[in-house]
Image 1 (tube, rainbow, N blue to C red):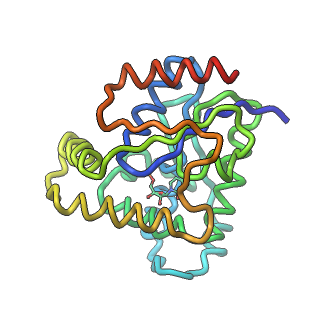
Image 2: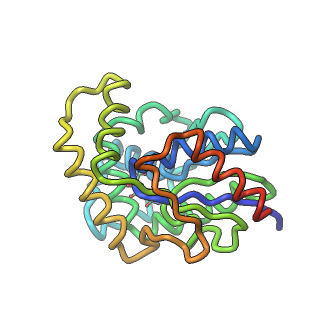
Length: 222
Ligand code: C5P
């Protein structure tokens, strides 16, 4: 079984999506966004009127769905044939994703999904637990972070660009802190840096610098 994974983990708003996409492009390999999968499950479960609370049993739900992820298209995600690519970017979906990502049944489902998706591929896979749980043996791992302030500002800009003006900077900062807290303290696959991951703080760096540093490291470790 062959898979060559560049694992990129880090908290929300650290710039890891931008970095992961750009790195994949620079290296000419596939890009896989695992956050999109948690978002899609959260969104879809919510639409099915499933109440997403701690400890909810999603076995029936997970057995009733089929997820598709288009690796070679621009990150197309579908559940039961419904294209969710755009909808999962709305602000309220972050919260649904964060709740659903704490459930062991969901993590197991997506762990299997992510491993089989990456089989026989070379890719940059982005998430929270890629280097620690999903592909602990990947040859190259990065942990991307940045200050809470800058992460909140970036997120606000993103939302505004997508036409969403419903939240303030303070609300976003609060969200960022809360999401960090839950992501780092959940029982299953918490967000943490793998011992062999390279740590990169993007607070003061610009994207070209980061991509340079990362591509050099990939080539060095390959
Ligand atoms: O990366 P993104 O912000 O889109 O992820 C949404 C949520 O999904 C995160 O807040 C996190 O709780 C969860 N997630 C996760 N494990 C991953 C990717 C995302 O728990 N590998």
